[in-house]
Length: 83
Image 1 (spheres, one colour):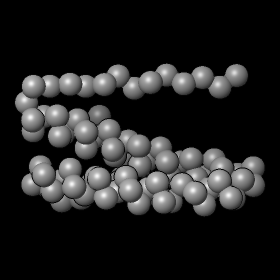
Image 2: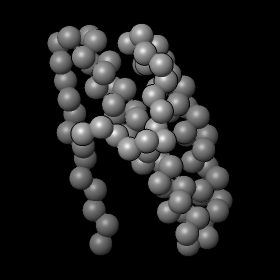
Image 3: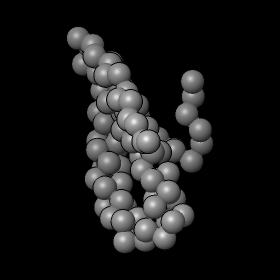
């Protein structure tokens, strides 16, 4: 039985820190959605898999906006996240 456990929401009164939390969350969503494409394709759900890239475009646009607001380059998500 599938289950979903929401990720805890980080909050701060510091605007820069809040942008950092948002960027970290956006990076995680992008990584997860890349995985969702592979999960859809595995059982042959190609129509569903083709819908996810548009979501990724929107997420990456927001990711770039957040990184720019922080004065950073767009994150490279081809490497594993730092823990």
